[in-house]
Amino acid sequence: MSFVKTKIRYIVLVSSITLSGLVYIFTTLNYSDNLITIRLTQIYAQFAILYLYLAIIASPLFSAFPNLSFRPTYILARRALGVSAFWFAFLHSNIAFFLQLQGFQGLGFLSSKYLIALGLSFFALVVLLVMTLTSIDKIIAKLGNKKWKMIHRTIYLAGITVLIHALMLGTHYSNLYEFIPQITIALVTILLLLEAYRLDKYLTQKITNFTQPKFGITFTLIVALVSITSYFSFAPAGIGPSLGIHAEHQKLAEQALNGSSTTTTNSKIPGLNGDRNKRFTVNLVTTDTKDPLTKNLTFTVSDAANGEPTSIFQIINEKISHLIIVDSTLNYFDHIHPEQNGNTFTISAKFPKENTYRVYIDFQPLGAIEQQFAFTLPIGSNPNNQTASQSIDTNLTKTFGDYLINVTSSSSLTAKELSLGKIALKFEIKSAQTGDPITNLKPYLGSFGHLVMINQKSYEYYHVHPANLTPPSPDQNGGPVVEFLPIGIYGPIKPGTYRIFAQFNHNGNILVGDYTIQVK
Image (tube, rainbow, N blue to C red; front, side):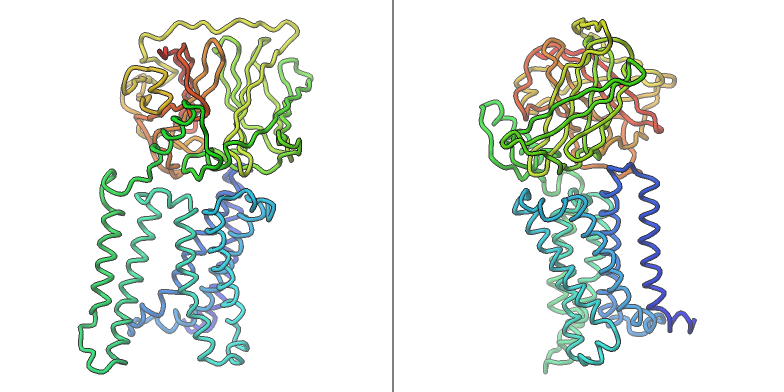
């Protein structure tokens, strides 16, 4: 035990560096290339907050409980905990800034909200850097104990700015009902209570005739704060504050119906945080392979205003780009993901037979909203160009392999109501053998389901988001009902017959359900 006490700082530092390496190995082995940077920034950020919290809570904890047996060891470890917080914050900020944002060139595309959040995080990183540099014994001796303590009290400023940064940009904090925000609120509450006790204890010692109880006026203020926070955090869903996501959704749809638009959008909706007026061009080049039904597809993206290559993209639904392929009859459906190489997206696509295909690519350049482009692609020496003519499904309960899926809508499908996001499509998934509801769906590309709608006559394409826009955690279960909310953000949904393709992830298998519906 004496060895641990004397070497505790080295143990903490070595373990935190080792932990960061293990996180990197785990992430690279378990996630695709497009997701590695996202997961690394998230996990490193969480460890930075954890180590920072452990460093901050030491003083108030031992002020309230001075006789805890591990107090001497913890106090010795405190400096190393702060340095570990800086280490993880440094990793998080470098990956986020230089890999996700593509460095300083990406700053010009960010909204004021993002710039403020980045400024706060930079301030916190500088504070942690100063604290790290002044954690060396020789520096402490040179500064003197009084100056050193004053410098290290700025850790509270770092803690406050980090928390604000996380609330503004952290993907885990978009919904305060989730596990990580709940744990954060609980830990911050404990810290505030301990700090309240310490402050009242200090006032009792320093101010003459200060006779209020140990938990005095400060405690009263903290209780009020905790009560308000608890109401919004632990209240049942629907009682707490609304983020207004679908209200914003509908506002954008109304603008599209009226032919108007806004220059910029600071949106909570995936794919809509950016300048709606920026335009891009996409050129598709196909090259042959030894297999006549396999083609190498290359999509080249340029800024329509100046012809410059566009090479900085954001992740949408956990991928840098999405490619939907259907045949001319809308019987065949495939959803694949090209890889980025500079301003191009490339992929080798296998087509089932000679035919004329429609391909739809989605991507989001930094500073712009999500872009959708469509191409017609004949495959083979004598491609068939039959039109889609499936009859409308009168029975919307269909069997797909081992699954029984029933589709219902909240009201009759009319183009105007769909365009305004007022009609939801609900997919209920059951076992085809037993009829039991499927309650263990897993996330697929950031949600419990994906839905696209394609007009049989015009081949107009709509990517439909789930009604719940908060991304589930990877181990979270969903089902048996998954709800989607079609909406005409890029333009009104027109009347006609549509083929719809829904995708779900069950036991690692991607289930595709297709239907033919009428929109009046």
